[in-house]
Image 1 (cartoon, helix red, strand yellow):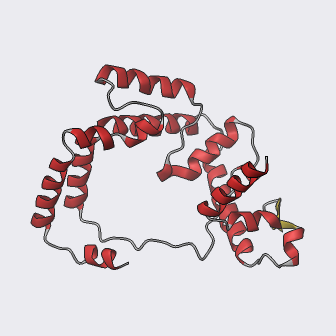
Image 2 (image 1 turned 135 degrees about the horizontal axis):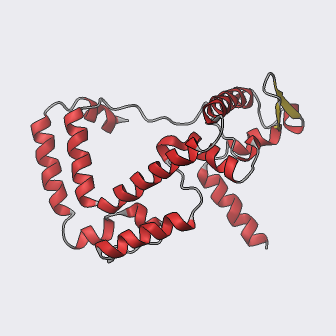
Length: 215
């Protein structure tokens, strides 16, 4: 929390710009090969690839994946996946429990944001190509789905309602063993969904580890 307060109070853009310029120098050379384009590497790409090889690999990614989720448009991405795979809302539903930690928002400085984006575009150009191609693909898929805007509104309302209902339950609640019907949405979920949705990432990793050890 303290570091956020420090950043919020940081007003001297000239000094921050100097820090970013010098910091970017550290990323040149060997370290650049170790840390640049992390999204592309997550998709199996190699940092040693040439520009031509990288563009060819990105084309291969988009020919192999029916859907690529975009974090900033997560609900839209899930809805596209739901429609393509003929899933139900239960298959993509999620919510953030009330006790989830939320980072405080920093005071945005347009000059700093622009400088940071420029540096990162220079440092990880293929990640930006991958991201822009993903958002372009998502836009086209959304346009091809009938009543997508209505579906998105319904999904957001469903998420909000389910989150409110689940926040009222505890693991000891009798409701956990019964279906929860969401009024006016013709939708119901089992109370156990709420219990599972509260688990954080580390709990799930431990759960999967335990299941693996049992096999």
